[in-house]
Image (tube, rainbow, N blue to C red; front, side):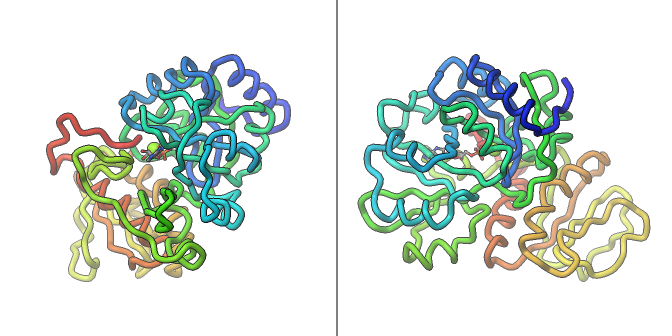
Length: 333
Ligand code: AMP
Ligand code: MG
């Protein structure tokens, strides 16, 4: 497998692959996705196979034109329209009642579908060129850290995909925020992500949360064990008392508080404490430290504001690996 640059010719080629029932890794502003024709159940099943993703974990359907919203969902509450108009294209997924057009394999049998319009120009061009909605989870093996560069996809998925389109580093770097909108008027936050909850609440009113570990999670992204490097992750309040001389440990600082004196084991999510920069760096930092074969990665807590909510969500789930029984429990890939 090689990486194909995201130019017009390759986007057209990728669209032909998708229209022919194939699966293509492509850049979005959140993370790299693995896309198939959302209306072709056989093609969608290839995504689950390639990722080793359990079939109870529904996929997000990506669109490039808001008119698809009404073809995929027969009940689009005004509140959903307002959010779509405000935040699309961008890292917000709306979960709405689905129409019969959406195959059950996409939604894992749920009567709702997650829909998003990504803002990355390569993603938008690809979906437009396909002329069909594109179902896409992150382009990584189930449960591992999400890819934020084409290189990550190549390393993790290699020949399991038909094509890899390159669109550079993901600018947002964490997955979309998922909101369920039903008739109740109260939007439900199913997963924190790349759109700050405060900004959504400004427009849609206070959000109800439904995160945590129910036995039958409505959104597998809610399961506790997730987004995990192979190396154990430990989240700590702050690094002031920590002995960073341990050569078998990696350290993820929120802000820069000193220099990595050439160890390669110390990473800063943001030099200035900028939350957007921190989110954009999170997965690539974890990828880099995970490749060092350390015995533990310590990560410093970030403030629970704006994108900090999504960062802490990912870190908390990453730190659950090996700590909880995951028998029978899935986690979104
Ligand atoms: P990703 O792997 O980042 O594409 O995320 C997919 C996430 O969206 C998973 O956590 C899914 O469970 C969630 N999701 C997709 N469709 C639905 C739906 N209809 N209801 C609830 N969550 C959904
Ligand atoms: Mg994923």
